[in-house]
Amino acid sequence: MSGNRVPDSRTIRMSGGQYKENDQSSSVVHGRSTTNFGAYTENSPTSSESLPEDIRTSFVKEVKAVVIELAGYSNAWEDPTSEKLKGIWIKVMPNMRDDFSRYEQDIRSLVAEILIEWRNSIGNAAIAAVKSDMEKKTSNRDRRAYVTNQTKGALWDHLCYYSDPKQGDGRKPTGFLQSPVVAETLSEHFKVILSIPETDRLKNPPTGAMVLTILAIDRAFKLFANGHLDNISPSDFSQDAQARSSAPIVQQFFGKTRTGQDRVSDELWEKIIAAAKSHGETPYVEVMDVADNKGKLPDDLKFC
Image (cartoon, rainbow, N blue to C red; front, top):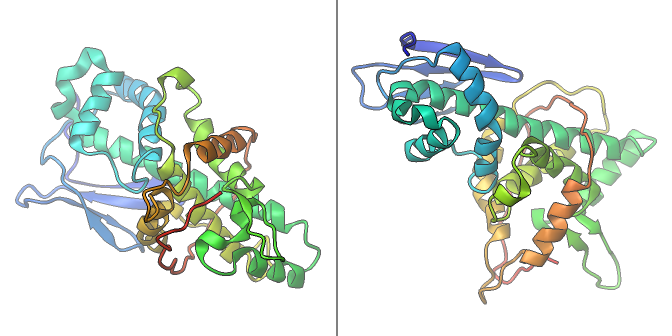
């Protein structure tokens, strides 16, 4: 079965943004330039065929949850390597296992689109969750004060991430990453991978999806810092360069302390995931670009 030759250059448009792929056969490295958000490069084959339409539809349907689950347990802003893509292709299209190299460039583009939409869905969910929280405040002044209270101090101290934000008498907040706004945002990830049976899912905690969740919520609160709830310009969380650069710092939340303890224990992860899965449908709201510096994580910080 054969398809058509992929054009040397194409622009793919999606809700919230676009990117352009360039295929220059005389170059060693081929890149994808991203409008208004800087640029990054990736390796891609110099020649590839497009998937036939029926196979493309079937592949996207079967691969979406698999690709998103994988990204949700790793670096959420990193597209799968060729080796991982080939493994995914063989898993979902076993009857065409030998055709991966033939269609690799088209497969890579489809997977990139899936991941862009996934990241944006988490960004949109965060906006919706924070907006719902802010609507409980009756004035712009109250909203500004609420944002300040919820986001003061280092990122890991922000009260918006805790289900029990105790204050005063030296009491520390508890219920890390179990607050309603976190649970509602992270639930977007679990809705997408719902088609994968629990018994077949990866066993590691979804750190990649949680990094996106934390940064999306931080960004959302800043959008509403001026107290306005309805004046938000559309944008693309997936291409937020500042959030992307902050991701490695947030990833440290899920590392180990100086003494070798997990900052987020398995028991705490179970509570975080249970809170997210308890949430229902999240409404869609557009997003805009904003972020800031995240600071250095203390060596002995352990969450509870």
